[in-house]
Amino acid sequence: MNWMLYLKTTETCNLNCKHCFTNGIDGPKIYWNPTAVSNWLNRFSKYINSHDTVHCEFHGGEPLLVNVGELRNVYDSVTLPNSTWGMTSNLVLRLYDEHYTFIRECLNNRVGTSWDPKIRFANDKQFELWYKNVRSLLENDVTIRLFVSVTKDTISIEPIYLLSWLKQLGVQEVSFERLTGNGSANKFPEIFPTNLEQDAWFLKMHEQSKLYGARDWFYNDFLETIYSKFETGFTGGGTFCRDCEEKIFTLNADGSVAGCPNSAPEEHFGNIEEPMENLINNPMRLNNIACERNRNPGCYSCEVFQYCGGDCHQLAWQDDICGAPKSLMKSLLSNKKKIWTIRKEYGFVN
Image 1 (tube, rainbow, N blue to C red):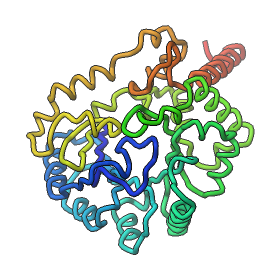
Image 2 (cartoon, rainbow, N blue to C red):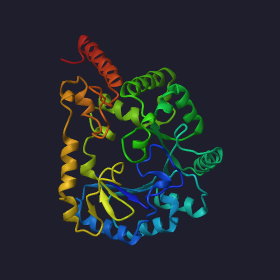
Image 3 (cartoon, helix red, strand yellow):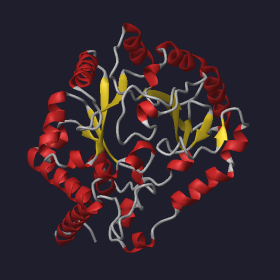
């Protein structure tokens, strides 16, 4: 099992993004108990197999609204075999030497941050501070994964223009994230693209990436996850794996425990002080797993189902249109069939 543990230091934030599942600045002014988090992680370590991997991600809200020394203390006090550590920050705050030291010594010189057109930064000052921090981290050889939410405003940008700007920014990894109906997003339905609009945009991104060689500019996690299904035959990975609720625990800042971080503020099923057996076997957690394994009946007759697997169960269908990039997958499947036909014609396959 590849475990993913989200450690939320707070439920609030210094930004107020319309799509945020923690409700931004309106989120509860609650902060974590780092000692309780450390104790939970050490107890969790006794329930994993020797061949399992564990990734711990400092998260929020904005994780750096608490002193970075608290994050360091949790890191230092926990013994987790086969573990890696990360952090996702909006980077709209001043970074000091201790932040750079923590990122270098504890996070393998990697950090995640986000950028979205129009819904993230309230003013130019916030954007300029974010941009300054991104450039400074890159100059200090930090690997940055940039998360971009796929909103109406995002898909209004021609994909190649957006990809070119991200290349100029200099980040090494980019992850495009589709919206789920959690937290603040429920108040702003106008930011959601339709599934058909989103589908067409991802197909265009693929086509333009191929035309301009954008695959070499940075690691595009969304596209590469899909490509891997057709290039290697591996059909899991990313939001397409359909086993998130089995392998994810989110520790909310108030001590409650949940699965998927998007729904964690509302759909928690236990408490950090409970015995680990109670959490693992909690009826609500088991129900979440069952709901995730379920598929819309339309999936089974879809020609790309074996590659898609049903996609994230939190992505809403619109009538008979799912949230998956089906047109892109159909294009890749068609190309794969052509290659197979040519190989057979020339005797490379029986």
